[in-house]
Image (tube, rainbow over all chains, first blue to last red; front, top):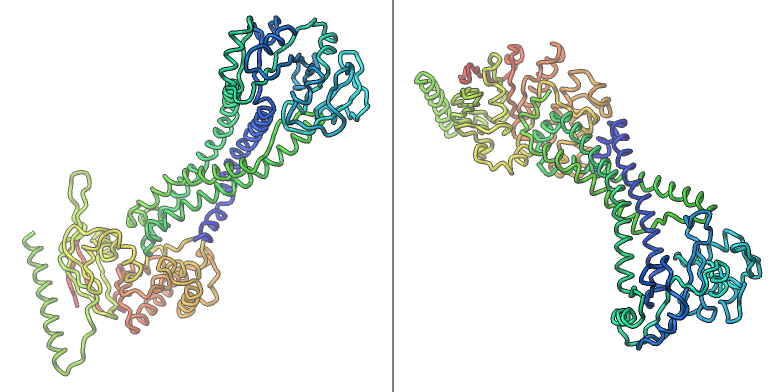
Length: 371
Length: 258
């Protein structure tokens, strides 16, 4: 039967090729959009794994509202159940680019740098130590972009810092992090003893959600984000992003599916007489269904394979091109390939269902009379 | 209507008389007649066009024996093709019965009709109705696919049939590369592919020249001599003349001229 299916497809070369291109275009969109979503998904998962055990304490007015200072760290530390707490100052590295590159300055107490960054490991050098001031630990993307080595000089806000540590690649926000001592960061950006937020590490066997509420009640002028809340919030944002990206890909694929349905309906109408002949020869309804559905599914399959090849190629080209700007925007995963392939097959088969049903239900005599 | 019934009654009596005669022959020393392969009893087909019933076939009765080459003649719209479609189970009868090889075609569930067509009936059409994208060999082979014949056997049998019909040098030609006569011979081979009990040919020489017509009729005669039962619907007296028996159909009513 497969040979008949392939022959029917190849006998209408132009029409089949256009239909396959329609599907391929849809699957291409699924791959590109999906790769973007997968990249964000991975960054999110990895970032979450780094910060998932900590409670974030903000000023009530928010990260950019000010009001959170060094003295709040000791207030947080005094709350029962808090094992450790330290403040962080976070600001964009390239202010002229409005932070669009995702590079961030993280000012943190030197003695806490290894704890704050756990489980991110060092690729080279060491973490910040007490007494460090114009020393910097950089993420992997920063190292690559500025071609930094241990001992290299690195300019931040018109000051030169010595690179003392390079982080392993993590696929998280820490790849674009520039980590300097907190006091140096506060001086550099002239913010006094202000902090962006405080990380509070809960004691073992202490419920982080409960502790989070307790901190809010105990330390005036603060609000908190527990690991659970952070995850929910981040997942919601990620979900919205995923829905937007994936649905635009799906829309394109559905248009591809309509292409298949149109082609199959035309093909069934043209071959009405042929179906009559097959029925007269004793073809079962399932044979006709299989023939028509198989054709649509095969076009879905070919379109899927083509769409995946072109999509993966385009993602590779775009990632290579974006590599010069150190932005990683797309990630192809086996899961994405499998989903795209199944989707192509499903679209093909679903689009072929109605034409196949029409073909199989034809009365042989009526079909034979068809001009 | 009364006249019609009378005619049918007479027809039936004539058939019964023949069978009685056959029975007598069987018991006696005379040459034994071949078995009856098809018996049609009061078969009718009425269409409703708008609200008006159109009687395409009225109480047709006929009997066909194994190896017979039967011609059904009649003017256009007389019901010849309808009769063939009913015997071929391509259409459903409004009344009456038709027994093919002992099976009542009018009571076979729709689900089982494809199998019955595959195993017992071969069709030959006026417009050949070959699948244009397949070669002659593949067209013949296709008929056996649905019967589940293994590929090797399919090809062997299709080749043998096409060779028998003198198309050995046309095996890999598509229908558009064949002449009308060649196409019709391919369709004859296709009809024979599943070794059916009965071949139904609807105006098989309608689109060919006289020379090709004669060659097709010759093929039918050869097949008939080998024991293949064939019913040919035709307009052409020259074709009918070559058949072993001719039946006339007029206004949906059939009468035996044998």
